[in-house]
Length: 290
Image (cartoon, rainbow, N blue to C red):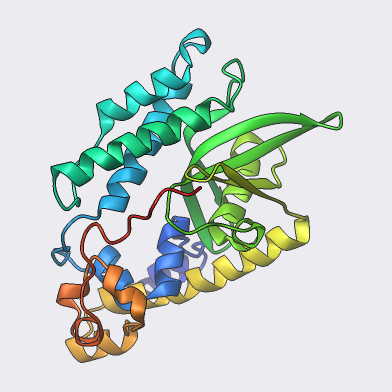
């Protein structure tokens, strides 16, 4: 009987939560092979060349974060443009000429956007890490900006997510985004203040796409996230137990589609590389939005 006591003690331990970010969950949803390459393989397989559109997005996000950390009197469109210059990345562009062209466009992007903001408005958070726990997930993530608004006499906490991509967005993108819904839930838990409004700010066009969640819609997103988390956690556990290559391939199948040409791991994925050719590093750039 004494020998069985340690095993009996283990039965009362709580279930281990699946630690994740919204990005990890959406990667599992999009392509399990890419999920494995990104989060499980050690060492991680080599990635392909950098993407110019990621360089644009990173520089814009850094410039916006820096702008909000300035004293209100210093928050001018010109300051945003200077910050953009300081953090500009040349990775992924076809050549220096293309990089300089896009630096000018990104500079105008942040200057135009910040000209619409009140410099005296202090965000609740900039690049703020938030998190929450459920019976399944230990969720965390970083929000671009958290705003405090007063609408019709009611206080609101708003999740703001910057977008710099070539695709024009719609309100459906804000409403259907799993990441934004999870951020809203995590903000509510972290700040202990209700948060239901999420916004996508598309800087190239100046469009703001907003959605006000309900308790029911947030619960639907959370249930979906928990389902994805349970699937990914089971696959992670099986992988750690030492699956053979064939079993691992079955557990983490590739989701082959035209979007594979944008995958960082296309060159080490036989299924993807057989289906599409890799896109050039600057192929994700778009002409300025009128």
